[in-house]
Length: 449
View 1 (cartoon, rainbow, N blue to C red):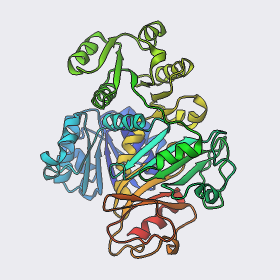
View 2 (cartoon, helix red, strand yellow; view 1 turned 90 degrees about the horizontal axis):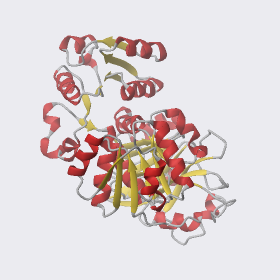
View 3 (tube, rainbow, N blue to C red; view 1 turned 30 degrees about the vertical axis):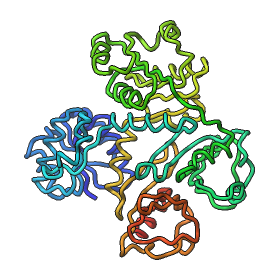
View 4 (cartoon, one colour; view 1 turned 90 degrees about the vertical axis):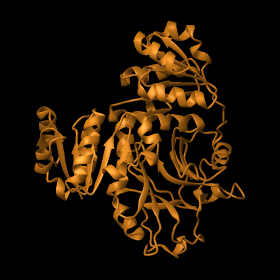
């Protein structure tokens, strides 16, 4: 695919980096020559210097032959304008990064497609949604929903209390009469390798395991892994930026007690006016005395989303030492994810990774409607729509020539999620969730073409 990325900032550079690994033909546009020089030196891509809203610059980037145009600068207006121009100049699909979440909330009514914008993404909104999901699934460190929760991805690390320790996947499944979950990926403690589990794969203490669950699967996992599902009621959020304020509003609307700590007095006053159901505190989230005055240790969860990754991590570590059950830190440095198991923070979230996940499905073959990369694992979760002409249509799962490094996690049929085992027959219209490593992606895509 020929992909043009407008904006060489953090999100744009990260996207270019990931997409270049996929052997895509990437062109990066930006006004900042220093950014472009760095990108050109470190990545196998083309660069074009200039204004992304300039018709001549877009033509220089060969926009008429672009399969996908992605505009992810920090300027919402420039992103929308460049997508409109790109579509008129021949780009097949366009994606604009926006900051006004009202655009996404009213997407169907506003009909952006008519203007030439196929998709809107907001990394900040994606991060806030991720935080809300994590609060709903307090036991788990990673989560992702397919079709409003018909199937859900849940990740956790196995402790010695887990009933499935030292048991094979097959034996673990026999512990329950009717299971509503299936393991799809395992990372051994101290290893970077990703295992796609089979029936004879043994669960070990310290394994980081990712599961797909249908309704009720989260309760079963809690029982089998020795985790106690605790209700989260009181939450403190450090940082009143867009992610912090959006998260505070959504969580407060869900009936939770929210305190938000914001360093800027002006911003704190604005938040106090906007968020009537949230207690806004003007102060520095690094001030332990202030946090203790605000009953820091009585919180069920701490969400640290300031603009500084190290501050967010340290705040979460302090929270853990004070007995706070659930901690989430926003980080910009992707290298921290490699240390996620040893850092001591329950969940790390990254805007660049969330934005990339949202965009990646557009470069996959077959009708991919959702996609996420497993954090710190070399694997992807893809949701395919089965078409009449798909090779898997009409086949039982046990008869599908699936590569060993891929596994079907579940099937959504008529909005209901199923943990589909060997005797499940796939049919047109099904939405099939697949976990696969990079070497098996092309073969899996061909099965659903």
